[in-house]
Length: 190
Image 1 (cartoon, rainbow, N blue to C red):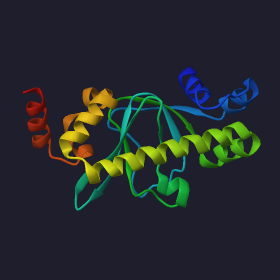
Image 2 (tube, rainbow, N blue to C red; image 1 turned 45 degrees about the horizontal axis):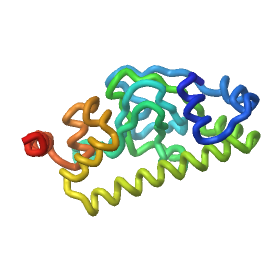
Image 3 (cartoon, rainbow, N blue to C red; image 1 turned 90 degrees about the vertical axis):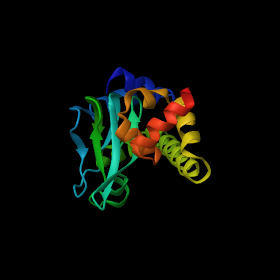
Image 4 (spheres, rainbow, N blue to C red; image 1 turned 60 degrees about the vertical axis):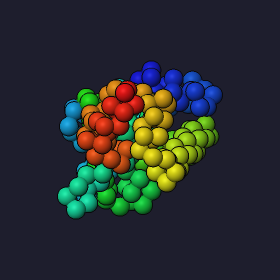
């Protein structure tokens, strides 16, 4: 575990030094180069990666069209929920948009850690709740907001997405075409 991950987990739970030390050697440090994959559709990988540095996108392909449904950056976790929860091959891809440094732990190792240490179990529950809340907010935004409202909210709440994510992926994440995103940006500046 790198210092950024240790600081992140401690912001959720008051871990003892023993609990941090027990987990420290269980996380493998991994670098994924821009364009490479953490997981591809059809593969089974129930590991969870914590992003120390970098940016990833999660997407699926349907009718030869990519749909980006998640963009993750520093201090966020990435995983295929199909693999992790259902123990099935992934339906999705997780690809690095930038060179990305991760701390990775397998599902089995993480579950053993959570069974041994109450605070790791508590951390898992709290972060899962956070992810579920973020997904609910995103779903609600697609139901109740226009593309411009989604863009304005993201630019206010997560300016890193606007500044770091290529227009093709950002427009896809917003549910619009790249051309619509360009028009939207011109109208907002205008």
